[in-house]
Amino acid sequence: MKLSPTGTVLDWFTPFNRSTLDANDVDMGSSGAIVLPDAVGSTTHPHLLLATGKIAILYLLDQTNMGKFTSGSNNDVQEVIPVPPPNTTQLDGGNYGVPAYWNGNLYTTGQNYPLSQFSIANGVISTPQAATSSNTFPPRGAVPAVSANGATNGIVWVLDLSGWTGTGSAVLYAYDATNVSTPLYSSPASGAGSAGAAVKFTVPTVANAKVYVGGQSSFTVFGLLPN
Image (cartoon, rainbow, N blue to C red):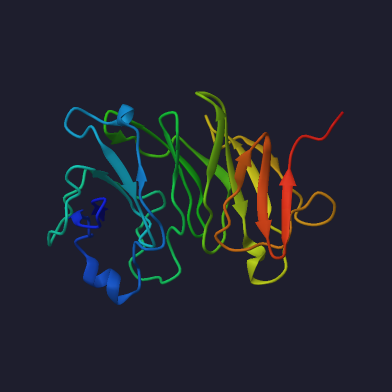
């Protein structure tokens, strides 16, 4: 939904097959919208945003004309399915976090999906993926975060939160943001150097050359050790 500063609904987008999605609890409320920079837009659609959810489709939308609802088809800019087919029947499938953007690239993952990297330019998401991670992420997926020095030294950080159903540790992964098939780091799953017990939907926070990970009654800080 697009709201005015006073809360008036200005525009919205709803998938055409909403009745099927509603019947199976496959909603878009599990994720959120990410406003993309105008640098990746086109003359026709200069102001873009990206939305997704349990349906596991990336909907590229025009901020000035989001499409509202039409039966039979969607009035959107583009739809991309990172891992076909789309999820229309599985309650716990799809995306449970907002994709990340950096330097002409989109990064997304979902339930039992790898981390996918898509290029976007001139209002178009290039398909298929430019790169994917060799590992997948568990039920509830993960939320990627990017650190960089402007347009260089980009790193995508993602947490594997498989252990949230018990007391297993979160595992922090780092990937080259120019090619996420290149892993840079993964924290140990147990023992010295591991994170605290996982909490679902946790997002790694990067600041001051460190990565902060919240856990069950714990807080873990990752950084470079002194020589």
